[in-house]
Length: 193
Image 1 (cartoon, one colour):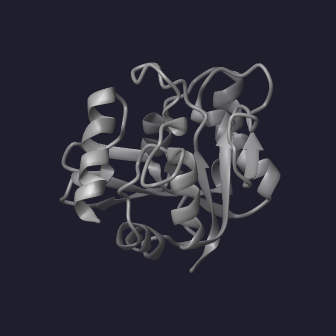
Image 2: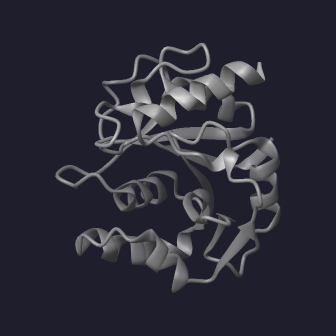
């Protein structure tokens, strides 16, 4: 098991999906969030869910709530997670990335060292800011970004000591942003079983 906390980001707007994607059924679970939480709990010693409200989830988990009055943005989740956990670093994954597997996570964790601010997955299509590790050294920047409503993770990573770990295969990094992507993911998951 990975001895660092994992934060599952499930506080987004889901505007392209037309409904809260974290609550869509997936993999035999009533919600994608529960599927992800269960799967990641087998890999990490501690898994927490970053969200605006815990009321929407019908299962037991450690929830880290965004500060009140903040727009839908991962920067709020980062600030709350660092402040709540008080740890040096944690692994992050978006709730809508159900195919990021243990092998990918292991590659990212092994690429990390104390001189870095972040270790992020990268594929030929680009970087994946919500798949990787973040260090507390970025907390000050996240607080500034939150205050200024600047939510550009890519810009933050390009200005920090970030190691990008390259993966050739795009498939595991597929995000479920639109209904057709959700349907594709269901089909892929069911075919893998």
